[in-house]
Figure (cartoon, rainbow over the protein chains, first blue to last red):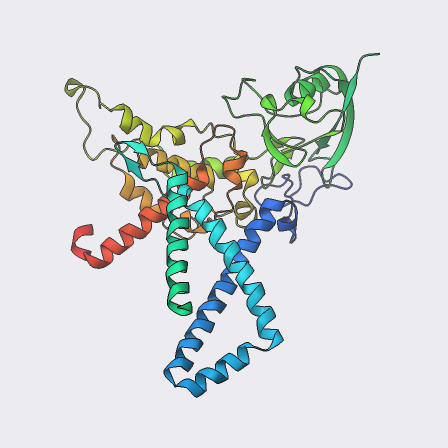
Length: 142
Length: 247
């Protein structure tokens, strides 16, 4: 039932015959840098998962003795793996930084009734990151 | 001759047009004019059939939200001088159905707003003789930011999640739920949690964060949603560890 069946009339739908609805483009994430940054941040989760799998494989080969571990290291030396790990590393750093910067927004910590400044929440994340990284580096490189 | 500026405005007549199209208008350029002044000039002097919503002209009523050069803006608070000498493109708020020209259909938002129960819920109302519900400045501070929302829906137009999944409750509705959850006088957090802990509630949000950027009142809906998620996760753990405590 179209009340005004004029030439070139809008597509009539059942409930709201005359409203125009714009379709969201598949490429909406290319409209703005912040949308692209968001999509890259989401995508970086895949690389975080990849690093977890690699670490598990590394521990697994370590548990099977020096020969197995040497084979693992050999596989990691291939240019393909180095390139993949380098890209993954960049994504994981991007993931970490973007999430640390967003953390103050998600945490409503209050001290003596006042909201704790965002820089303290983000800062403590960065400090923890540095301390843990330094501890791991010391353990491996000593 | 006085200086002018061009406006490219969405026109859509549901009876005659299959899809919206742009119409160009030339209006006087004045430094103290906002986009809404230019739209009113068009309506008064150039084409009286142009339709758009507005009311207070001072960023309080939340009626005049539109897309200005692709960004969701209150047109009463967006100066032409910001875009001069270029063409200013004015479109209806993104992701909402268009009724006519720059007028969008907002029933979806109104329904969602009501669903989150944005009012104070008490298990037992105090009698008038018992006096007011008192609140300290600190208790007020806990929710004040979220209470600044003017329901202008710019955050919905900024949210790609809402664009892709119209069932998503959306930034303003969740921020307003949080406004009442954080109010020391309110006891309805559990009722709201049951509604908003569903997939189309808080978990629909992927923290794009653009709602906060678009908000003219600095409400930070994205922050409100993440804080809500944290609370929901804590509640879920609590109910897992102490199932008897949730009843």
